[in-house]
Structures are given as structure tokens and as C-alpha cells.
Length: 444
Ligand code: SF4
Image (cartoon, rainbow, N blue to C red):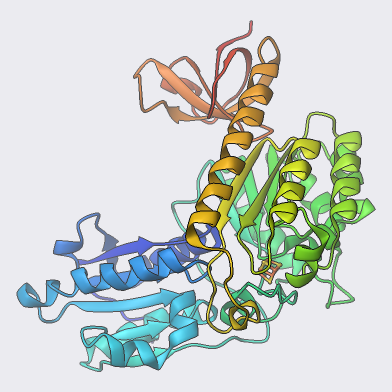
């Protein structure tokens, strides 16, 4: 008999905070729950199970997760059998502490134990409460069902965890050390996705370009990319996130060689000052970062480069901040995710004095974002008059006669068209570069 619990007509509401890894984990949990007979609802008030998938990389999402669980617990007034669970990085970090802190909470599930969800619910339906399942296996969890949400564009986890221990980052504690999935399994999953109509895959991991670095007999990351590039029917390959120190010549060369590898590289730099980078334990200098991004643009002149950066790290002075602005002008990022530093308990940097005031952090963030807005708009305007391959995703939210798609460089393009184009690769001539998107018309 199957050890999976089949229940009828139960509804699950999932709230997700954080990065694409978390989004993907939520999709995988939903796929597991669907196998157990659950259906997703968008109304938490009518759910039988509420799952909050948390993020602890920054303070804000963690606090939001606590307050939202506080709101959701009202559900037990009308439905005392409703189950509330916390998953994700806060679950891994706080574990049992959460059960003590939030009396209405029924279970805690770490990101390395997602596959245990059906078992946990089996116990919950027998009346058990207060279950905490956290920790990591030696390898990436395997044989999880492919979420039905993975359609035209799909995510595929290729590795989990991180060995880098940047001094501000909690990820190695909450996601564990690096574990790479076997390449055979990754390729089989992508083949299956393509059979179901997927045209674009994004390979996911905390540090994808160190894929299999600690698994000598496995394919290297560029070799894996080359194998994926050969899969018939797959049109586009992307990956995120990468670390500058693990960006090798072979990976850079792949951009000039692999037909389906999209010209977009997300390469966090975090700070432009070598002194700050050293305190961050980033393992790269500004000069190395500049040299690698230059080589990327030589290998693929159209490549779009995006990054993460933070302001107000302990000890960041005005001169350090100016170095960050200078690096931004030198690289001319196509887009940038920028944040104010906030100490995360359990990291090395949290032991240091958070010596930039919130006013200073705010001012620096505003200056940096203003600079980036100007660069992004300039780069989008430079695309006016060019023809771009666009993978059509669906209708634009603003007009029923406008379709929305993405260029290989990951820019959103809106253009007149009908829904018969969804899933097609079309060529669009760009007529207007805007702050956050492009406008155009179909060629031919
Ligand atoms: S590379 Fe650094 S910032 Fe990225 S996940 Fe690892 S420790 Fe965190």
C-alpha cells in the first residue's frame, strides 16, 4: 500500500517570501500536496492547511512572516482542525523555538526536508501537533514531483547550499553546505519538462557556477550547460545565482558557444570597495569583478549583466560607498537589486558594530538607486530600433490587445498581438525603451 496519505477536497494556501529558490520550493511543496489530494486556494480564510514559506536573508521578510502567521492563526476560530506550518529558512534557523513562540503553529519544516511534507501531514491528520523537521540530507532531495506550475518557463534546482560563508549571510546555516544534484537527474527532469511544453529553463542554486565542485566524477557546470543545450525542443537556458570567484573562463566561453544559453548574467558584487569586500569575506576584489564582467561582454557583446549590492555594511565609509558608485558606472549594469545592510543573527558580521545609521543607509541607497535608474533607462533607450527575439508569455496586464514576452537578455517587451502567440518565439522591433520594460512591434 502507498505510504502517501490521500485526503479528499482539502485546500492549501501557500504564502511565499524571498528568492526564486523559495518560490520553487513552494511549487514543489504544492506538487507534493496535490499528490495527497490538496487543491490550492488563494483565500487563506477557506484553507485547511496554511503554509508560510519564509526567508531570513533580510530582516524585513522574517518580520513579515511572523506577523502574517499571527494573522492566519485566526483561522482556527472557525476551523479548529486547520493546520498551520512554517517552512523555509526561518523554519531551519529557529526550529523548535517557533513552536514555543507561536502557539497556533502546528509544524515547522526546513527547506532540506520538503519531501517529508506528506508524512508530516499524515501525522497531523491523526491528531499530532508540534512537529519540527529540519536539517539536511547528504545530497539534494530527489524524486520530488514536477510542479504543474512549471510550464512555458520552468525552474530546475541543480544544487543547494553554499560553502562561501560571506560574513553577512545566513544562507550556509539555513540551507546547509553545497550539495549538487546528479546531472543525469537534472537532464531527465529537463527532458520531461520539454515534453510538457517548457521552452525555457532557469537552473537554480545558491551558487550554481560552483556546481559539482566537490563531486569530482560529475560533469562540471559548463559541461552540464553544454548537455542541456543539446536537448531537442528547449529554446532557452538561464541560471542564477553565480559567485564572481567561481566564474571561470569556460563558463564565460559558453556564452559565445551555446546556442540556447541566454545572454543574461546575474553576478552579485555587493560592494565596490576592496576593504569592504574583504570584511564581507567575498573572496574577490573589485578589479577581479571588473575584469570578469569585461570578459563576459567580450564573449557576448549583447549580454545583460545584473547584480546585487548592499549599502551600509559595518565600517563602510563615504569613500567606500563612492567606490561602489564608481564600479556601477564602470560596469553599467542593466539592472540592480539594492539593499540596506541589516545584521542577521548567527553571522560573523552580526558581532560587529552596525555603525552606519539608518539615515546614512537610506541616503546611500537613494543615491545608488537614482544612479542605477539613469543607467537602466539609458541602456533600454539604446535598444530602440533593434530587433529582438521574444518568447511570448501572455497578455500584458495593461491592455487585452498587447502581448508580453521576454528578450534573451531578460527584458520585458510589450507589443501588439493576440493570444495565439503565447509560447512562440517572435521577432520584435523595439520602438521605445522605458524604465522597466520595452515597447515594440512584430517584424515581418
Ligand atoms: S555566496 Fe555568500 S551571499 Fe551567496 S549564499 Fe553563499 S554565503 Fe550567502
